[in-house]
Each structure stands twice: as structure tokens, then as C-alpha cells.
Picture 1 (cartoon, rainbow, N blue to C red):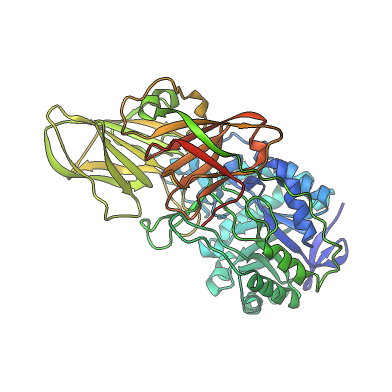
Picture 2 (picture 1 turned 180 degrees about the vertical axis):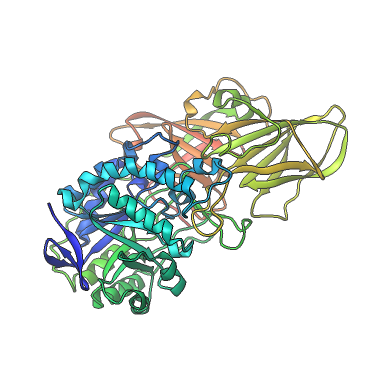
Length: 585
């Protein structure tokens, strides 16, 4: 049994003062086969602790159905950190932000039209309590007080930037204690007056998050917490990217200098991130700071420009950070795990194609409703959804209005593709006339990730209100939910009925010998999703900045590997290109 507590201005581990030198590494962004490799590199850099969030939506994707296997096996991750010789900080807040889908909250919460999140709203707290009863039972044996490596846990995440409900924060604290979380509890917020006022819990250690000006940040913290160890819980030594932006980088010397300032002040620190990893599947989130039309979706890569890059290789920042740390800690000679091989497998021909509309009955079951319903109402978390309705004619030309589109819609009338309606672009218009006899209207809506931060997180997906042709609403709709969680049901021998429709493309990569990490270059494709042996690698989009998708070797196999590409704007691409270097912008 052990003990990790606060005494005066120090962290105390089993009676001795300790400075926490921590790095964030999210188990859910790294394939399990590589957890040990990344943790060993964290320790080799001179760190003594690893920190991770816990995304609720990964562990309870459907109400009452829990997942702790594969990339969701948090117990295995924590035990691996223990074997490597690291302490563990766990942040199991119901909300995590993290540029993760809906900030880690499960989408099924939004099926309740009256739901209020992150506050003392009983229906929300009832769901949190039921989740914590399961999650915290998994973590309890791993606490330092039970002989495990978990030394501290977070109550909520940057709550001051969202609200000021102390009853809510107190409920979370009391629930964690009731579930046996008898380790150090803390909160973390930015170093501003209203952030600290809103996010702190009486009797709970507050930490601060920032990327520079450490002395100013800690001075602000001291106004509200005159005593206690100083800790930066999130040292932003890099940053993330949105689609259509420039790739963010931060100078290694600058990051190292700010790290040294914290060390000179006697502070503890957690690098956010130490290793970013990848937003596999549909799990990347989005930002929105002004109104719900300023939507900015996050890319698939979570490289973050930090000490370990997306594929786990040390960067210049790794060596600069270790050099600074060596001035304050006696470090052994650097010993890194053997480099993970990378391979450029070259070009592979696309062999077959299948049309989305031809495959709807294989991928989904039709749902008839009067008006279009949101994904959440229909029990869908992520992916795509097709709305179909027969519109009578003749009708004169009028604008098609989707009220509101979350997030990006492709519109088809009969066999004709009419264009795109995007949530963030109010200038784009689609107008059409309807011939005598009418026509079938199809709207394919893509969920590009729920907002993960700020005041607009109640981000329901699909068509949230209705569809109008001119001023008249259209009714009598058939919907097809397309989470695309099983592409093995596709029939590539069925033929394609119409050229103007999104298509699935299939190719095979043959690998001789042991597979290596590789990167799939998608710069000649337009927009869509790629599956490797049934595993969703994530989204690609020619808006950039990201041009390659990272494929860890454990997702590949010796012999034949199947790749399925769901391309929304088919332009007749005939090949895939596998390279040994990432291109992130």
C-alpha cells in the first residue's frame, strides 16, 4: 500500500517529497501493441508519471453497454505503465475536451431533448453515476492506496471555462469518494479569474493549464490557492489542427525554455501532449467559439507537434526537453526501444467499386418518419445518414433549405448530384425545379464530429429541424443510419446503378514478411473515410493540412490486406499510395 498526498507546498509520495514530471499519452489514440513502446520512451525522456483522460463515449457507446477491450482496455494500459515504472494520473471526468468527439460525452445523452450537461441536472448526474459505478470499480484496484500506480484523479476538466455549478462539482467529488477513490483529487483550469472561480472545489487541489508565462500563471493561482504544490496540469508544448488550416508547430527551443521556467520555480508539470497519437474512426471533435455556424472540425492526426510524433518517433522537442530536464534531475544514459520499422509499400490498384445508394439496404434498415430526425433520436452516434423523400412536381425553381445541417450535406435529385450544403458556409445555395411526376430527393449528411469545447456542445447531428423547398416544409421521409461500423456487408459485385453517387472502392495490399508501419497518401482523393482490414483509420479531405493516414503495423497482416475507401466525391481514382513518411501539412 502507498500514499500520495499534499503537505504544505509539496507532493509527498510515501513520506518523501516528489516533483511530478508527467506526460499525457492517451491509450485510446494508440494501438495497444504500442503502449509499452510509447511509455518506455516517456520514461527514457526522464519523466516519472504518465497522464491520461478517460473518454466516456468509448467505454459506454450505448447506454448500459460497456467496453473495456482492445484500445478501451484502460486496466491493461495502467498496468503496463506500472510495469515500465511510471506513476499514473487519471482524468476520468465525465467531460474531457481533448479534441475528442463531444468532449468524451456519449452521443446518446442528446437523444433526450431536455438534457443539460455538466451541471446539477439530475438526469445527467444519474447517467454519470451509473457510468462511474462501472468505471471506478475497474480503477479501484489500481489506486496507490491499493498497491497500484494511480496516484491522483481529476474531478472535472477546465470547468471554469464552461460554468460555475459548485453543486455539480461537489456531486462528482462525493461520488468518486463514495466509489472508493481515496487518492489525491484535483481540478485544472486556465489561469484567469473567472476560470479559477468557476472551476475550483473547496478542499480540492487546483492546478493550472497554459503554454507560456509560467510565473504569471502561478501568481494568479496563488491568489486563489495560497498554499499547495504548483503544477501545470497541461503544458501546451504543441497544438492540434482543424481541416482547412495550416499545420500547427511550436519551436522546440521555445517549448523547452518555458519548461525550464516551470522547473526553476519548483513546479511540477504534465506535458499536453507528450505523444498525441491518432483520432481513429469518427472520434475527432470540433470547435465552435462564436455561434454554431463557426464550426471547425479537427483532423484525423493528433500528432500535436510534441516530443513523440504520431507514429511514436522522438522529435527534436524530445531531445531539447530531456536536455533541460538533465539540469534538474540525474538522468541515466538515454536508452530507447528499437525503432519501429516503416515501409513504403508503393502503389496499389483499386479493383472494385460499389455505389452507396445501391448498398443502402445492406448497410442499414429504412426508418419512416414525418420529418427528418437527428442521428441521436434514431439511436446513431456517428458516421453518415441518408434522408430520402419523394417531392411532387411540377414545381418552379426554389432554394432547398436544410434547417439546420449538422454538418455537411450532399444533395441529389433523381440521378443528379446538385451540390453541397455546409454548416459553416452560408453563401452556398442549391436551387432546383421539380419536373412533372416528381422526383426523389436524397440528402446524405456527414457528422464531422461533435463540438468538444465551449458553449455550443449540445451539437445534435444530421438534420436538426427540417427541410424546405422554398418556404414549404417537406414531409414523409425515409432515413438510413450509416455508422459504417461493418463494411464487410458490402457487395462489390452488385454493379452501380448511377454514376453520380458516393462510392466504396476496394483494393488489396500484399505484404511479404512481417508488416511495418506505413502511411497512406490520399492527396489525389477528395473526401471520405478509409478502412484497413475492417478498421476505420479515419477521415481524409483534400482541404488538408493532413495528406497521409497513419497505419500502425498491428493493423496489417502478412499476405493480403483489404482496403475500403468511402469516397464522397468520386473522381475516378484508381490507386492507393503507401509511403514511409507522414505528410501533415
